[in-house]
Length: 325
Image (tube, rainbow, N blue to C red; front, side):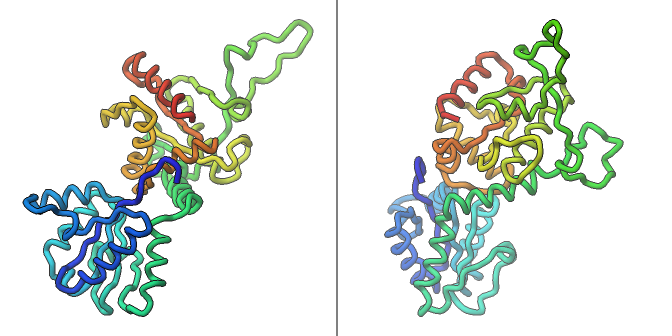
């Protein structure tokens, strides 16, 4: 993947009965270009054990939990499992010994059965496919997350009297607003009838970069969410979004998290962190950058006017431009 680093894998296992599989996986995954952390290789002599494990968990993209009776009984394994869950790391359970009970936290997660040594090559191929999904597979996962969350429902927060009403899907009630601008004359030329104002979708379809400005409550956020959803399914009133990958975020979230965008990589890193924190979807570095390089990324920024200073707005706009989005 252009602009990405290798997937970093943390192996959690009990030495008593999981070391053989752990070592074999470390060797085979490393040959495929993944960066694999295993305690007997990842902790230099004299290092503080717990600190190194915490550091490795922080840096990992994926945690492989090798399930054995020893894993079940190991406080260290369960601590690693809990730490990975709290950090919202992707965990893949690997059943190494048939009949091993699945820990409660890992119960809902599909596991890979490595208990039959004769089928190791097949399971390794399945694991590699899971660790290194294609761009299209990642985009499908991302699209489904957005359809289930950000782009799904009408936001009724401004209408407390409607809080007990049934949830409403956004496309069912959305009405494309009309817009006006400096380049749209308010008065018709002499002898000509005044044309109705253009719709926001029409204006959006005309150009690559566009800003919608309006009073609080005028529907700017809902409009952006509708445009974002149109990237993922066919919707009326917007025709230029087919095949684009939407990225929708609030500037105020960046300021609250003290995010500073000083160079293009900061923007990509923020996007990935946003998906991890807000959508519970870890994405590999390079995902959004790859979409942008192909001209397939639609960046939608809500609340640029909420940035506290002119310098901050100019800096953010400049870095987005430098990132070629």
